[in-house]
Length: 205
Image (cartoon, rainbow, N blue to C red):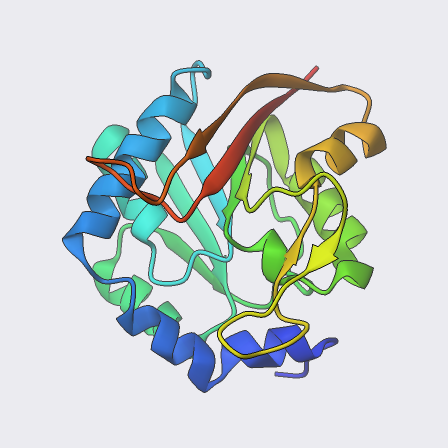
């Protein structure tokens, strides 16, 4: 598989494999269920989900517990993560870079969680368009937030993590998107900690 950016190669290779090992704890699943319970409270009649950058499917597994009848799909670049997802068997898996994924049909709820922060900023508009075109109801962005674009060191690696106002940029790009709700989950939460994630739930008119 050929990649447009060094960030894609970074996640498709050994660093992405190591990430899998750090995210197999049941506590991570419980925290994801708590997060999506909050987010889904702002939705209605959601029967299909698409996650861009789903890794081994922790978020999809959480959604399966919360909405057992829903159709689940995920796009993932890392081959080892894809194999884990296939073993689980609870979601349709697209083994592809987000930048190469083509919309086959729309889902009710399209989301990223901790993925846009790792996309090369030059290609963010492409991903925004993909999220918009993939959704017929809701878009959820759960990422590190910063009011202006900034790059920070990521585990000793440069140009691999970028913070900005992703949701604000999407709403500016697509005026028919409405902000339904938003929230923050703290890494020292007493019950269900997250990695200082700020989430935004958007709906399409």
